[in-house]
Image (cartoon, rainbow, N blue to C red; front, side):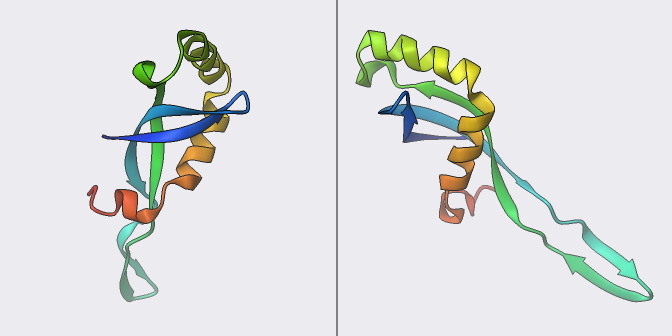
Length: 94
């Protein structure tokens, strides 16, 4: 698992958050189809595991508000963050 400090838009504010993610791959590996053997490497993509506001970098009220927002909108935020991560962020994760 990898952690990265990113600015995440929460309640129309950019809040610095620690984002934990791991990399998965959608390839099937070696396969044979009609006698033809081949290898499907697939594509690597990040999966966000956790989003935590940086407590030392935001006022307490914004921190509490951000935590509540993350709890209720985790899937939406995780999808957006995964799209923002570039392949360079996780290419060496294997």
